[in-house]
Every structure is written in C-alpha cells, then in structure tokens.
Picture 1 (tube, protein in one colour):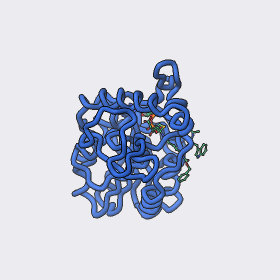
Picture 2 (cartoon, helix red, strand yellow):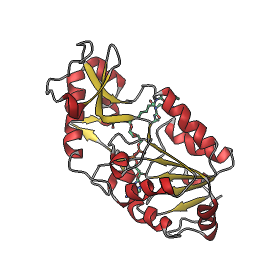
Picture 3 (cartoon, helix red, strand yellow):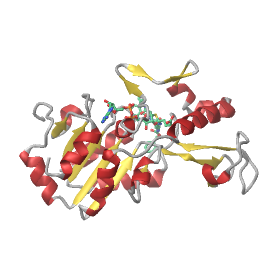
Picture 4 (cartoon, rainbow, N blue to C red):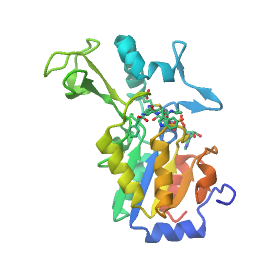
Length: 250
Ligand code: BJW
C-alpha cells in the first residue's frame, strides 16, 4: 500500500530515478491540461458537445450513423488544439529520452503534443487527431497535408470516405501499438502514470502489468484515481510542476 499522497518524491523514488534503466510512462489528458487542452472527465463531470456526451459522439456507432457529425466534432477539436503548445511536463518527458537507457512513452492523448515537445517513437494508443484513415483501404493521410475541406475527405488512394484516425469507444486499439506498450510495461523497472483518470481500458491496465512484473509504480495526478491505492507512490500535483521537479532529484 502506498503512503499518503505526497508533493515531493520520496528518498526511495529519488534513488530509483538514479538507478533505473528501463522506464515506462503512461500519460493521459491531464498531461496536456496545462497546455489548455480540456480533459474528458473532471469534478464528476464528463465532456459534452452539442448536448451529446463524448462517449456518444466519440463512438464507433456514431461513425456508422453520422460520419459528418464525427468530422465536425474533430474539426472543432483540431481548431482548439491549433493554439496549444507543449508544457513543462511534455518537455521534461522529452528530455527523459536521454536520461534513461530505455524510455517508453505511451499516451492515450491524440493531440500530438508529446511529439511536438520532441519525444520520439511515442506509442499513441488512441490514435492521432491530425491523421485521417480511409474507411475502405485504411490508407492514412496527414490532415495538414491533405488540405481539402471536403467532409468526409476522399481518400487520395482509392477515393472512398476517410474518418479521423482515432480510437473511439467500442473500437480496437491498434494491436501492434498496444502489444508493444504491454511488452515494455512488463519489462520496466520504474513506471509513471501521469494525468489519467485510469478509467478507460485497456490503457488503464498497463500500470498493473508493470507492477505485476515487479516495477515501482508512481502516479502523478492532483486527484485520486482507482489506481492510487495500488501504486507504490502517489505524487499529488500537476504534471507541469511535478515532472520537471523529478528531473532535479525531486
Ligand atoms: C491532471 C492535471 C494536471 C487534470 N496534471 N493530471 C474493461 C472494463 C470495463 C470496460 C472496458 C474494459 N475493456 C474495454 C472496455 C470498454 C471501453 C472502456 O474502457 N470503457 C470504460 C469507460 C468503462 N474501452 C474501449 O472501448 C476501448 N477499446 C477496447 O477495449 O477494444 C478491445 C481491445 C482490448 C485490448 C487490446 C485491443 C483492443 C477503446 C477506448 C478508446 C477511448 N477513446 C477515447 C476517445 C478518443 C477520441 C476522442 O478524443 O474523442 O480516448 S475516450 C477518452 O478517455 C480518450 C482518452 O484517451 C481516454 C482516457 O481519458 P484520460 O486521458 O484518462 O482523461 P480523463 O479526462 O478521464 O482524466 C484526466 C485526468 O487528469 C484526471 O485524473 C485529472 O485529475 C487529471 N489531471 N489536470 C496532471 N495538470
């Protein structure tokens, strides 16, 4: 059982940060909150758009029923994201690439802010909002390159309609990306869970994989989550403050 939530790293964590070779980090919407990206759930509330809970608009069923509405929702999201820049948490995690022998950064976020901060090889478990995918041939296109405003966009390869390349409720995660994340979680010595409510599976199960394999698991979040009780240490605070603090010994 972890002790009470702390604001600074324990002596044990500082020592583990010095000696760890393989580190696994899972991030969620909270890591981008200080960049101005709204989270999905907070204060008992869930995001709603045009009267629709996001579990409805961001669902596989909605792609079938009303693809233009799904595009409208993601165009709105991309519009808001255009103004957002990486914050000190993204930047600290990008620097961690050079700090540890192996760093795996798996994110549930679709905003691309880890890559914008300089992180390489980010495992995007839920896809990317800047990419479109063909419903027929699965070709992918960067929406910034595609340029066309037609909705849904036509696939440049086969002409069929495209959809946002994000993993909606009721859809499979990209199996290769999830399998690699699970493998790295099972092989890490130190695991950080940053800014996620840990409610959405299978991503929320990755820290348990790490812990079962013997890793020391640390949560960074201003609020408790269902994972808090099973983490070795809980750092209660904002990612943009806590992550840079961990670079200087905590
Ligand atoms: C801060 C902060 C600051 C604030 N600093 N922190 C097992 C049990 C029950 C159900 C299921 C199950 N397995 C699967 C399911 C069904 C479903 C699911 O999990 N439902 C639950 C909600 C009950 N899962 C699925 O349908 C998934 N597919 C699937 O399982 O397929 C089968 C499969 C299995 C194994 C391998 C492969 C396939 C798909 C889930 C896709 C989720 N997609 C979304 C939408 C993406 C598109 C869009 O953006 O609209 O992804 S849902 C939404 O939630 C989004 C997020 O990535 C995801 C997680 O949210 P996150 O990141 O945790 O954000 P919040 O808002 O919930 O929390 C923010 C946190 O930050 C809070 O804790 C704050 O306190 C904190 N915070 N400020 C640090 N400054």
